[in-house]
Amino acid sequence: DRKILAELQAAGRLTVTELAQRVSLSVAPCHRRLRELERSGAIRGYRAVIDPAAIGLGFEVLVHVTMEREDAATIASFERSLAEVPEIHHAERLFGDPDYLIRVATADLAAYQALRDEKLATLPGVQRLTSTIVMKRVVDNRPFPVPAP
Image (cartoon, rainbow, N blue to C red; front, side, top):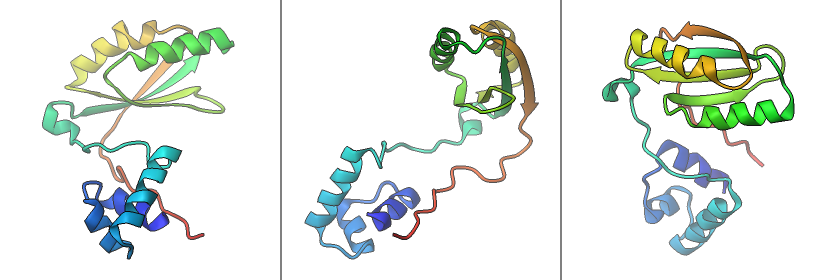
């Protein structure tokens, strides 16, 4: 299973036959293990990794969000609203300050400013937004290390 996960992280478009060869299994057991990894949620899905600049979204910003209130209703409302903003590529709730870290991709600074002022700043419970422009991605989409048993 660990070998299957490692191989699929590196090359997600492998056929079951190719995957079986790489992990030294016959096709049927490899297929069964793959389906079980999908069923259990260890494999959450498959997708293409797209270069944001290639689709006109090369301006990236990390946004630190500090909440005014952190009661359950405000947090739930904020997170529901956050999920509806398509320019948000990644969002995490954190312990400590800030409360959230959000990765946003837009076309340029003007597009980000409009997004920040019209959408992000108006989300429920937001006290403060702090924006940091991404200069360069140093590590991106690295596969998770699959520990030995």
